[in-house]
Length: 228
Length: 204
Image (cartoon, one colour):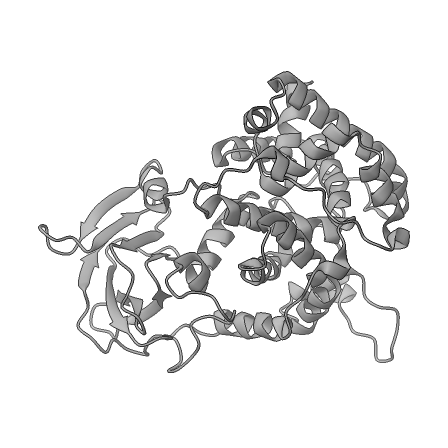
C-alpha cells in the first residue's frame, strides 16, 4: 500500500496519535488532492454509520432542550455560574467524572483539538499526558508535606488542575481566577480535574469547595491560591 | 465557502427545507434555530453511532452534546465545497466518541465479543450505503468496523485478529477502496463540488 494512502486512511479512521495527525493535517492543508482523498475516505466510512439501525437508537426525551440550555449557558457572559444552576444538563451523570461534568473542560479540550483539525488522543492518565506536553510546567498544589494535587501550565496558556481526591458528597470544586484588586472570576466547577481556557502569565488561580452548581463568589476559604 | 449572509436570509413564506450546509452557515451566525434543526435531523444518527462505539447508553448524550457544541463553535470553518455536512458532523462525533473510549480504563475486547451491528430494517433510504458495506468480505468488514468504531491501530488490529500486520493494512485499504468505488455514484450525484485550493482556514 502506498504509505500516503495508508496514513491518510489511518487519519480518516482516527487511528493516528496527535503528532502524527498534525503532520497529516499540515500536508492536507497544503495539498487539495490529499484533502480530497481524506474526504473520500470519510464519505465511505459514513456508509458504516448510515447502515446502523436507527430505529434502535434512542434520542433521550428533552435532549434538544438540554443542548440549547447548555449552548446558552456556555455562550452567556462569564461571571460565575448562576446560583442553583445545575452543574450539568445531562441527567444521571456522576459529578465526580470531571470530563463529563465540566463544560469548561470539554469546551476547552475539544475546541483546542478542533482548532488544528484533529482530536486529542490521550492516554489513560490525563495528568501525565498534560505534563508530558513539550514546554509544559508542572507544580504541586498545597503544602509541601501534604500536596492537594497538581497543576500543569501548558505552553499555550491553558492550565490543567487535578486534585488528589474528589469533593465530598454534595459539594463541588470551583476554580477561580484571582484578579488583583478585583473579585474572583469563576472558571467553572469541576469534580476532580479541569482544563481552563488560556490564561495570561502571572494570573493566580484558586480552588474553593462550593455547593453543587457553584457559587457566584467563593463561600469557603480557598484550598490554595496559586500564581501561574 | 458560500456567502452565509445571503444564503441564510430566511424566506418570508414557507419554502424548501434548508440544506444541512445552509443550517451550518446559519449556525455560524449564532442562529439557535439552525442548531435545533440540525439536531432534529441528525441526533438519532449520532446516538446510533455513539451507542455502537461506546456499546452502552451512558455517556452518549454527553458526547453528542459535545459534538453539536463543537459544530456550533466551528461552523464558520465548515467549507461546503470541501465536505458534505453529514460527513463533517459525523466526523466530529466520531472523534468525540473515540476520545471517550480512550479516556476509559483499559478493557480487553475479545475478538469473539465483537458482534455485527444491526442493519437498518428498511434500507431503501440507505441502499447505496448498505450495498457499499454489505459488499465487503467478512474479514474486511470486521477490520473496518473495529478500526472505525473502536479506534484500534493497525498493530492493535493485528494483535486482536491474529492477522499479519501487512494483511491488516492491505485488507483495510482494499475495503475502503471498494466502498469508495460503490459510493462513487452517490458522490457524483449529491456530493459537494470538487475541492478547490484554499489559502486560509483549517479543516472543515
